[in-house]
Image 1 (cartoon, rainbow, N blue to C red):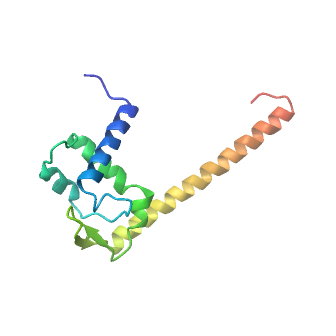
Image 2: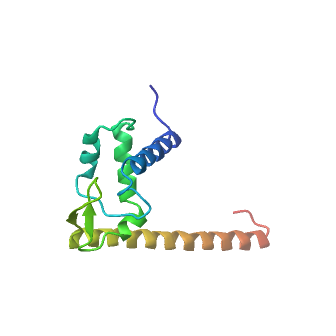
Length: 134
């Protein structure tokens, strides 16, 4: 069996996320909620019919909890939710600070990338006006 491409991995992660939304709509809806610590094990323990491969469930949950939308919901004292959609723990100060740090770093990187693109475009325009290839 060969190595899977990124496209295949992404497609299977998307399918796993769709399964999670269908199987656990109270916690995997558009109203993003912080999830209970250990929720992956709880989900895997349900052994529901039609469940994707464990690796893709883990990947989908990992992708979900690292999304900017999820990280923005990580505020101190906000409830975490279990697979039944019931409160089960709270977001700690440390967890909230880490989420904020990740979001800040991503924003900084995004601004730096946008700035570099602007610089690259300006250099390309200037070179084109001088009939010089980069």
